[in-house]
Length: 254
Image (spheres, one colour):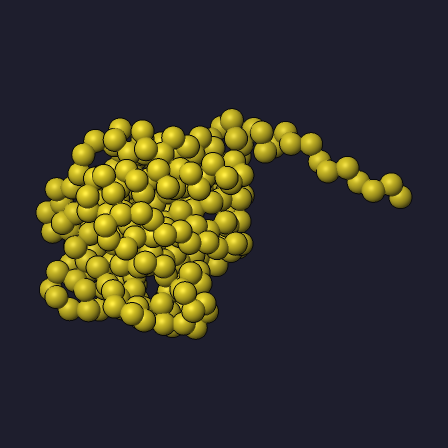
């Protein structure tokens, strides 16, 4: 029997402003559609200044077939689609449960979003973030995420985002012990990528079917200063076996 998969994209939209300096959210959505992801974790999806209106308009995303997870501070219908620029879009079939956001420490305002979802893989926790420009801030921010995870149930979890880390992945692994970072392709700057800034980290419940890869087909190289990075996930064999062998709940006596 074929194992179930889920493809996730992470992409810094640069507020839908491309390398041609044109703001074109329609082009952004074209790239997202071409990626073929089931779930998109986005950064810089809202404009910077209050009330932080959406750079990627909600109605356009919904018209393109996406569910816009309501992380905005004013809730559904508000001007923002995210929190500190972080947003998530999901294809139909993914059931959205509880949504949360977290302020992160550091010199600049930074945050993370967390969604508890029901997916083809079963329950899945997805965390999206955009870490700071200074390494000491990034390490503090990852530590804050680690502390958050300590208080949550142990379920399949993926962290995705623009982590702004140019160094070795082991630096981040030490800062958040519950997750392991995957090797990632170079994705920034999009015309000739030099840095692997856009990354995924997985809990032990999950495995990638292949290494994360960048979506390079045009207009991706001009739509933002980052390329979208994607990964296809499965449940790890041990997790899948545990799910299959879990005893059924006892039925009430007739």
